[in-house]
Image (cartoon, rainbow, N blue to C red; front, side, top):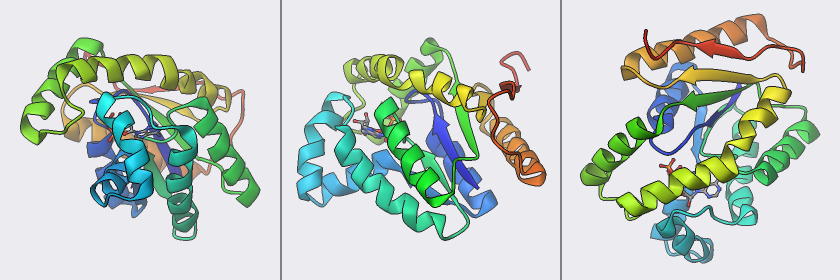
Length: 209
Ligand code: ADP
């Protein structure tokens, strides 16, 4: 199974990705983590990426595509993967579409984590205090949310048009959100749905329960 997650910073993609990966025995490919590993190891790619990450800007597509593609190709040979933080631009989505169709292994589902801006800011400021990530100051957080709106949110329509978009209400207890997601993935796997443009968008869960 091949699943990707779309959502603003703080929507809980990382937490849910880890759970889904464990539950379905998928590789978890988190592009932000891959970039931070490169930065810590002070590689050429890490040095090129660092200033963008620290500012809360997206790292140029060619760098991100290079590191993510290698992992995706490897994970394809082993039962599938969950992509957390990729694609984040239309160019990245198109690149992923090319690798996938060339190998006959298209994405099964794109999970869109929907959540309000106020809730996000509160979560992110809390996380900044706990983790001390260099890109988690309030100013960069606001900037990253704007970057999401401008550059990543168009992917929602891109995957909706391909008939693989599932909307997840990403508010509420972590366990409840995980259950919704696992439910839809089990359902998808059981039905082995073929992608089709006429498939309606699905909505799972709701903020008011
Ligand atoms: P968050 O979801 O909280 O923004 P991530 O760990 O996913 O955290 O990403 C941290 C940073 O890494 C981003 O702000 C960006 O600079 C960079 N990054 C991660 N994924 C991508 C991507 N697909 N394209 C470009 N830059 C990326």
